Length: 450
Image 1 (tube, rainbow, N blue to C red):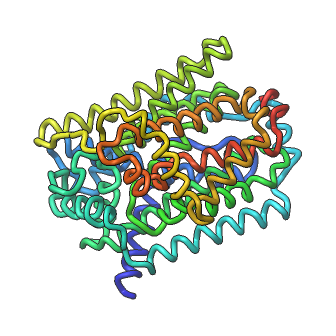
Image 2: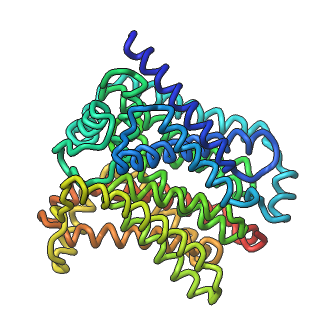
């Protein structure tokens, strides 16, 4: 019990640090009233977390290390000020949406929805303290790397599984260890319940910016969290997929919002979350690459030039972030390899399809996927038109990229599906459910007015 209380105190301390850095960045959600301000704190928490991780990485690359907490926070604060400088005016809704937001204040139905969502997120946080770490990858890879980083006060070669994977997840866990004063893999995983909870709130506010009636927004977010079982289980494990899911979805939604509002602040969010996704997992870079390709394709279909700033933002952010990590790898003898990548096996498509059916044949593993398929089927005509077309292209692109990964697997494709399909599909399933929800509600007219 004492260890859990100490862990809760350390988690509260780093959460306050992240919130402060996010506030300093000036990044917030548009919208009137205290509701938008409250949702903005969730966004700021995520911004602060990524700023701390990037500061740790830069200090390690410079050979200084991150043993000095004030030094890390000071460098992260400089990053926050730079974000405030480049973001320009805060993103604001278009006049039509702003008037609608004023006319639809948070009513009792919406309040109940936010309370329900908050209750689920708090329950997930409590469970992360109660349930011991049981994930093999979380323990042997992310957990042991975090332990090595914390003991050395810098990045080191921990000789763990997949050592070449980007370091943001173990860096943030090591940050908690530095506040704790000791290493506890069971307590390290509680960070991800905080990150997941903030992501759930952000999803809800993105939905509120688009949904009419607005009171449906927290219920949409609640449904996404509960339907995405792989996402929800990430709240109480030390896997990196939850963090990648959050960054991929929020980078995508930020680009989508920028398309409609043309506020520079949305591009800043897109660039930051894209860079973070690249530094979270090995598949983060291709995931953001798919997003950039979808933006480019949507721009070509729309015959407009406004897509170039978004494409350049995503490309520059991911290349810069990946370059920092590659620089560290080259300087410390960490050799990337293609252990999961083999030759293309197009004839294995039938085996992969059967394996996918087996994996997602159950209610628990396939319920969210089936819900997304049904929602897309009912609203397919809406999803092929602006403004939802970009989100649809991203989801379809991520699905095709995942299928290609199975066909390029160095291990037998059916075995790769059995061991990683729920995890890989879970990385973009919340976005697919979000798009399906917007399609079902039928928001094409509001989208055209934005």
